[in-house]
Image (tube, rainbow, N blue to C red; front, side):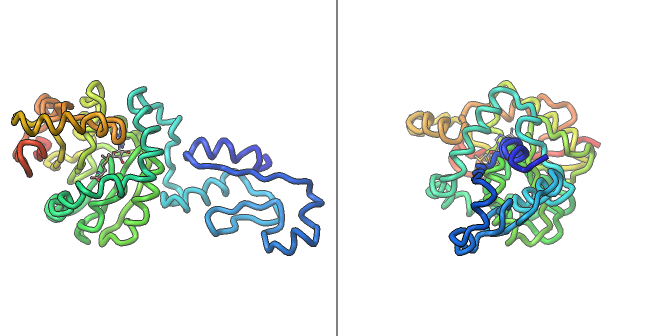
Length: 294
Ligand SMILES: C[S@@+](CC[C@H](N)C(=O)[O-])C[C@H]1O[C@@H](n2cnc3c(N)ncnc32)[C@H](O)[C@@H]1O
């Protein structure tokens, strides 16, 4: 198959913008074209790398090159967004994060001034096989100890692309995977010592919360631990008024809400025992921590 036919499909699969420039073959032999120093056609360029020049490429090799550029490693098959068969509400969120990813770190900057004080303690004590769900742009990555073998998932290829840069500065091994936290189809059962998520569950739609909790239960080893940091509504009326003021922005940009009731869903999971609930600030930033009974 010629890559002109392959590219649109792969673009869709990996959420990439594909530009196909097609001109008659003779054009590429002209002095004008040769003077541009562009690769001989047909060619595929990803970023600055010329993947193939002057010949065709198989779909498999092209896909492998794309995966390498997205930091998902050859052989680690990344489920395509469509193939994830996301629930509608999650699909809406995934689409939202295509745009949000472009500005995420800038938009989040004022809040990150606070969050970055918490992050070292949120992950610093973890060891062994750890999975972080909803890695986002990878803000926690640099705080993991070298004793961690980290799997980091997010359903947004655009967010993962940003996390990839930070993965380069991590002290532990990092495997980034494009995956839905409510399904985790590519994640093995009873495999992890820790599940971590920060500000993921407040994004997961209310009707899908239990699915994410079920996955946390499934992938944890017996005796494995989980730690979730989420935002909830304050009981203080002044604070709640402020939250209400921001709530439309927070939902529109991040898909997040203060009323996801994640704690209630974790409490319902018989296999999990909650060992700590603590507010990190006011009665808004809630840590839910516990263990999978073994
Ligand atoms: C508010 S951001 C938090 C990012 C990061 N954890 C942090 O602390 O900065 C939520 C992240 O969760 C991801 N996300 C939301 N729902 C998800 C789902 N069902 N499966 C996987 N990732 C999801 C989003 O793409 C986004 O990157």
